[in-house]
Image (cartoon, rainbow, N blue to C red; front, top):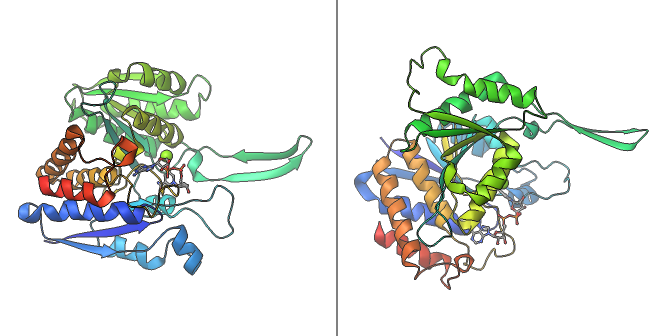
Length: 344
Ligand code: NAI
Ligand code: MG
């Protein structure tokens, strides 16, 4: 059976870091099934050229031909551009990738021991993008809908419990703000608390300890005592913010991987954006993209291949001789990729 991997570099440094992910997967050789890479278009550059940020060919190739994918990064303008909407948000929806899983782990050199996973709900919350603007007695009035459903909360809860169960500490923290948003965050919190009592769970999660924390104090404690966290599960917006904050604890956004996962498809994606300030210079850190490839393989059940890639990356970081400028080094993107490939 061939592993068909859709490759979507999209914008900016996406074009520079995704080849690193490909090289790392290829370096595994015959220890994983035969791989085939399918190059696919999406992104803001694609939009300015073709008027479409996510061509239908890309979606169809992913749905019909590929078992998984790697995504680089998109440049999303912060002002509204007519006809443009983010392809990554659309892809998560179309492929029903309801979980964004982001492990954040420190290697030797960083300040404090961090070893946690943020499990972020990926389909709803404020990101349903139901916004309106009217003019009232207060001038312009803008509103956004925040949607939390039992179904989405339950499946993200199940994934978070599964991930916690497979980690040594087996500790899950539910992040919310239900002291203020008692209806929406209350539903999220209670649904996740209820996962162990669902029919079919049958005591499976008995070994998982559950705690909860308001999102603001969670950020505070994340910076003061990150070691208290193991798995953190959060609604979409809080999860987005917490995972970037956690990334700051380990030195660089260029190190932090993620996968977007559903029940039938998985897409690896570095947490960072398209980094226009450094794009085109061959200095972007490829390690987040390479680690994302490992996570994708792990999700598909190729744990050995994932381990080999992760060990190679950890070694390169620990040795500290071949690092990109964001980590204080002088090496090029392509040189770091070569170092990793050599170790795999
Ligand atoms: P960013 O993540 O692109 O960059 C933030 C800072 O981190 C920059 O100084 C950048 O040079 C640095 N950085 C990021 N990745 C790096 C890497 N691999 N190696 C070395 N340094 C790295 O976030 P920013 O600047 O807020 O956004 C730029 C564009 O990216 C925007 O258009 C934004 O919409 C988009 N973006 C896309 C994301 C995605 O595709 N999922 C996520 C975040 C932002
Ligand atoms: Mg983010």
